[in-house]
Length: 109
Image (cartoon, rainbow, N blue to C red; front, side, top):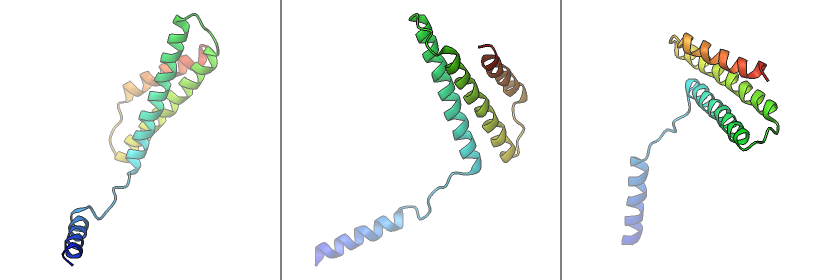
């Protein structure tokens, strides 16, 4: 009987201490996560291309550069959208600079 009471007490204590609500992602979090994911993927692709070029391989360089550029442009759109939802002014110059860089990569291959 003591084990049952002790187990019940532990369960009740756990339920009362544990949070009752789950933390859902806000729309800003969704867009920011999308921005970070896509920009990291684009950077990863460019680093792989750089490594391959240093090793002398030019296999699928242009198609992979275009893929990285598309991801980078989509990442910028997600970042702008996150700022719009948050009601704050985005860093326009930094975003324009990034946009030009990705467009250059996309168009120069």
